[in-house]
Length: 201
Image 1 (cartoon, helix red, strand yellow):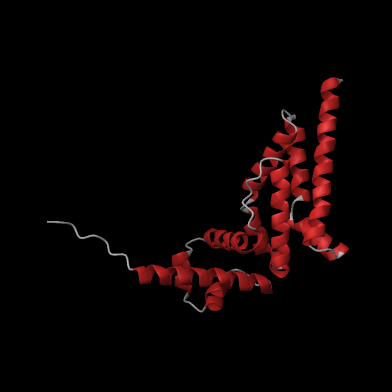
Image 2 (cartoon, rainbow, N blue to C red):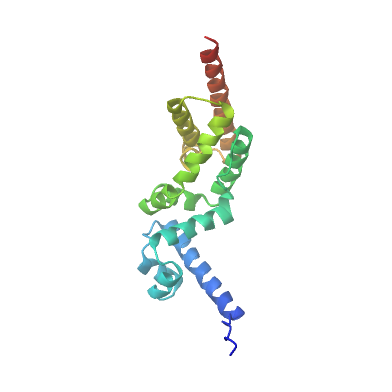
């Protein structure tokens, strides 16, 4: 007897995708207001039952990851894949433009505990990206220098730096990116010079 195949309803799949998007957009709306991302608050904002949110996002980390994916897709378009100076500067410029596109949301991500949780989940990828850029700029740098230099790059290329320049210097994303590009290039140039002097002495 031939086994019956599993029927996948295109309509049901489409409805599930729409519900998932509605839930993620509810997270965005809550972040705009600085509200907590609880299952109850997300369900209320999305106008769905709480169990529906759990069905699509069984763990809170899943919900946070979906929110971050939404921000990348709709705003920053950053993939954290830069592996050298030129790629890093290009990624930073694209990210800063995305930050300006929805400044209230990005500022809420910076200044709320749930926003910090979402951003912390991406730290391993950021760490890897900045270390790769240091390896490209200064091959063979000693581990302590490599780690500290990667940390400097993260300070420069960060939403916090964009926010500082926007809030205290009253400049837009393009000018902020110019400032940060100057910082990145000057820092890496100085680091290469320092490494050269160390090897020639």
